[in-house]
Each structure stands twice: as C-alpha cells, then as structure tokens.
Length: 166
Image (cartoon, rainbow, N blue to C red; front, side, top):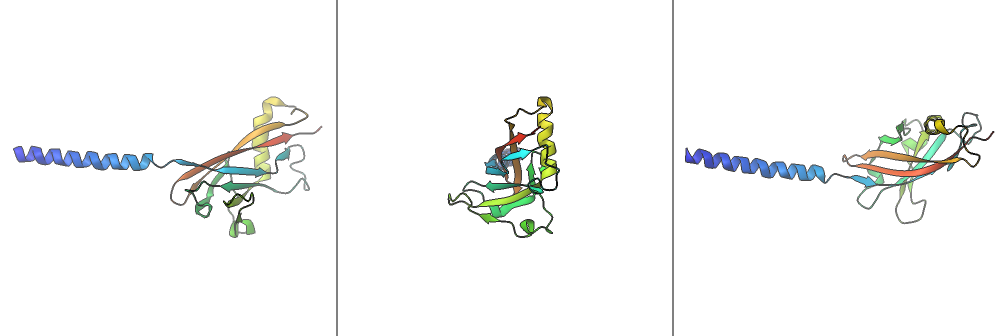
C-alpha cells in the first residue's frame, strides 16, 4: 500500500512538471511586433472606384524583428483589419514575393498587397460617423496581422490619411 502511494505521488509529480513545461512553452509563444508601412499614405475615398484612381492595390511592407524571418510569413494568414492579403499565385507579386530592404536599415521587408476597394470600404466604415470627412482628411490607423509557418503571430500598425474631396 505504501509503495502505491509513493508511485502515485511520483506520477502526480511527473505530470505536474510536464504540465508546467507545456504551459511555459505555450506562454512563451508571443506576438512579434512588426514594422508596417502602408502605401499609398493617402486614400482618396471619393475616387477609389474610378479606373484610374491610383491602381487596384494597397501595398504594405512588413518588417519583422530579429527573431522573425519574413520568408516564414504565411501570406494566406495576413490581414489588414480583416481584409485578406492577395494570395492568388496568378499575380507575380504573390508567386515571387518581393523581399528587400526598402528602408535601408539592414532588415528586409515583405511586400504584400490588398484589394483597394475592400480597404477603402473598411476605411469608410471607420469614417461613417464623421461624414463629411474634414477637408484636410482624417488619419485612420490600420493594423496588419498574420502568422509565421511555425505558428507564431505578428502584428503591426500604420496610418493612412483618408480624404473625400467635394
């Protein structure tokens, strides 16, 4: 009987140690803080649907900290405030994503693109309570989130100026 209690105590101890290790490993998975630059920096919400209104895409450049690698970003998980990044490989920028150090700080950025109409609709939904938009425009913060292939997540924000000229 005494041996059973000792074995049970040892088994419980092993479970507690293993469980604590698992909890520690899950707790150590954190969100990487990405640097994000969104272009264009100004969105003309009135003419966003015109054929020649600056193109079809909103472009974002994502830079990860030292413990992240942009080549490990799973593009299918990248969202700009819920708007998915284009992931159809029929586009050259998806098939061969641009990864270069645009800001010349020694760390490369991944270029991703988002459907301009979807982003403008999102921005307008943020501004609906402000119509008409002030003449100088309104700065709107936008957040990009996503995952790396190892399961870690990242998040970064930038702002665009929304204008709606009369």
